[in-house]
Length: 358
Image 1 (cartoon, helix red, strand yellow):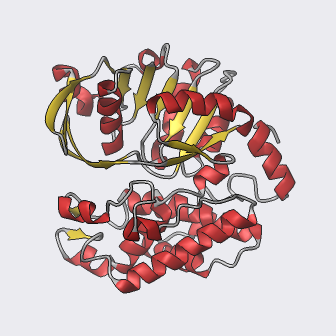
Image 2 (cartoon, helix red, strand yellow; image 1 turned 60 degrees about the horizontal axis):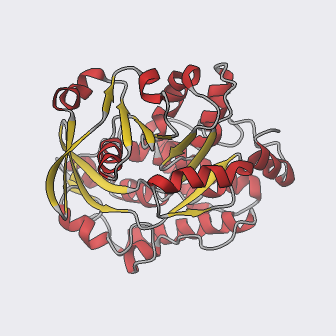
């Protein structure tokens, strides 16, 4: 299958390499051509994982997004959500009917990117989908080298509009066999693990993150008090899902720490052992703040408010984060009011998510 991988983050390099190794014809594009040059020059990405180290050829390394999208049946965009609008605008003139776009994870980007490409003039009938995490726990170890700690074993995935679920999932499953269907894109967005894991970790570790040159929020930074807050934050997420009529499994985050039923299986100890997450985290610019908190947690808190669910942990963490960055994050770009959706009733929202039309 022809697959386009768009973006320059850790997960984008893992996607280009893994999908190429699986036999797909991959076109890899990122906006920063200079940063892409090592892959252009070599023609491959080096992967380090449990099976060792190997160089994986990439069929097409592209500086032109039109070239990357041409003929692609599946478009995978594993970038931080903060890049989604720019990529949507760049994609818009080149999309064609029948293409499927997969956002792992999405932060409700399936709806937002669809609206953005339409506003840019695209008439293409595109299917969008999103899941709750990256399919890889991965870090770049060089300009064209990635270290993959593990791969996802379950990827709950919602499609927008949901009327195209069968088509969307059939295409995605050819590249990611471990996907599991969600009811719609909002259900998929409310599987997002980042806004549950990362805001408590960075906010409750703010002092050591700003004091030490590097700090592992998943090791020393994960203590009983942090876990307690994370568990309660996740219960709020599940309460929101239930209030919207979404069924189990809800992928409770406790399974990430205590069992093998979560999206990556039994991996927390492996993550800590890798050492790749002992890093410097800037509380103003790191994606754990700009994506998972300012976008993802803001989205979750706004949906809770809209659904009438008491969510003091979500709101409290959001207020503390706002104090750090100096913004009212209740009015963030992914809050339902900002998206123009807060005035919809539940039936109207359900219809929008199913048909793609208000």
